[in-house]
Image 1 (cartoon, rainbow, N blue to C red):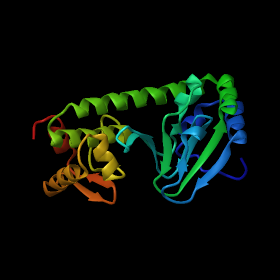
Image 2 (image 1 turned 45 degrees about the vertical axis):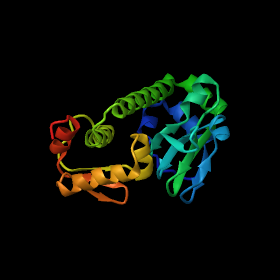
Image 3 (image 1 turned 90 degrees about the vertical axis):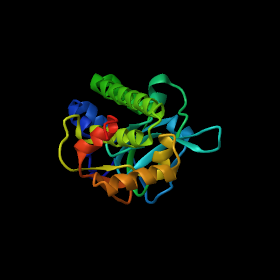
Length: 229
């Protein structure tokens, strides 16, 4: 990899020893996706592993209905698709850019060589997978909830925990991306989710602007998520 690269989002790189980190960066192939809607195919994700440096991407999977299921919303610092690397099989999904993105990529052989040099890279990948499993479990629980207000509130609170931690207070902003994909992920129509968000806005709980939700009253949102409001 030539030239200087902003690695601010990949804080986990600082935990690696110098040799492993230098090897990882020297063997990386930089890749730019200059606009929205550019795809990394499932075949490529089955052979290479990527680190998102900037921008946003969605990891999607086709389902039997002909639509797409949202597997993961990727943010700077996220590594994908580690499952194919660790189990030696294919990746069922594909990645789609939500705007201009910059990535680093490695073949599985290159990445495994660094993993053998520094076990902390293994630990990071397993922690990433554990977080994805926990997120998926939370989604399944939300789908069992019949109250759509509670479901949307709980989904927003999960985003808050992911970005700011359990003890977050005050006004915070979360990026929910496409309402259509977010609604599909929660098992509801886009119109339903939009209506609930509009109701929260009218109640002074939040403000919306182009996929970003600014939560003004976090305690009240927690009450809704707990079924108390």
